[in-house]
Length: 114
Image 1 (tube, one colour):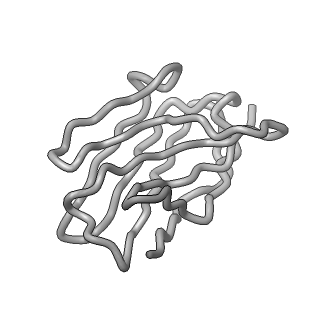
Image 2 (cartoon, rainbow, N blue to C red):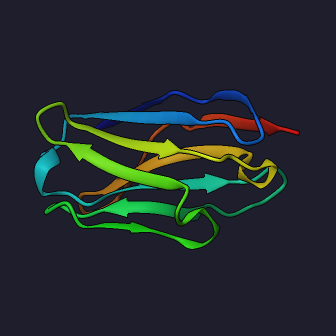
């Protein structure tokens, strides 16, 4: 199982970024998918957004109204669109799924500068 995340980078406050995560080696369409982030200096990863196997989405906390998550089962891809980025959104973002154990992508760094 491999989750390959991409799309991170440096952006100014108020800007946008789109993260993508492509999965391989997994039965993709019947799995919930999510994006977590780990802020600098933090030891924990916090859930940002999730999408169930039937497409139901949940955006968590301070990113509500700014982030959206979607999946493309034909492409085995989950996407996180991040708008109106704030300095506090700076973090390493990880895609996630579960197939009897937690599966994590390698993380992609998002840096929002003021």
